[in-house]
Amino acid sequence: MVRQATILVIDDEKEIRDLIEIYLKNEGFRILHAQDGVEALELLDTHEVHLIILDVMMPRMDGIVTCLKIREDKHMPILMLSAKSQDLDKIHGLSTGADDYMTKPFNPLELVARVKSQLRRFLLLNQAYLPEADEIEVGDLVINTSTHEVRVNGREVKMTPIEFSILELLARNRGIVFSAEKIYERVWNEPFYQSDNTVMVHVRKIREKIEENTRKPRFIKTVWGVGYKIET
Image (cartoon, rainbow, N blue to C red; front, top):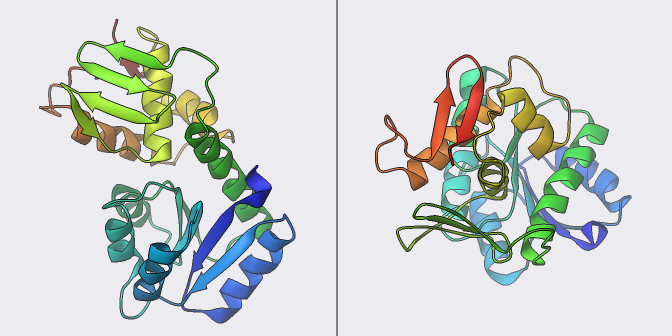
């Protein structure tokens, strides 16, 4: 269950860590703390963690470098926190492998809601929750919804939970064009904000992983002015 999950909070400000812990413990989560990326990586080697809340600006090892190192071999959701609120900062954070991005100061109740949303998706995928067929095939692209594996020409491709959810949505509905708004609402289960570049960033990251030529994608097509689709 989501309420039994362990969350690692990485932030150099003790007040922020304590605030997050109060709200998440009230929801039944187990909390681990780290003051920076170095300490966080050590904890990840010895503890099972289901979600990470990661500050960007930290001493010794900042959140961007930490995220990149975590993504070398781990795929739990990462929710990035930062005082930087510009679109380019958010795009950069998502491009390193984060699944979500919130700016400081943040609403603790919104943080809890986003944590729950990310965890539901991640835990269901990793419990082999299977409402439909195990495998979706689109040419030489194979998506296994039971094992959360993606293969292209037999080569395994590592996906974050959000990336997998977007790819699965498009693959299950081949030929249907999904706007960025619809993708966001279906995958994140929350209202879409017009200025949000989140979907665009994640689609770009998916293409980088599954396409031989991102300028001429074989799988995820852009319908200009409308959205994205995977053709039949």
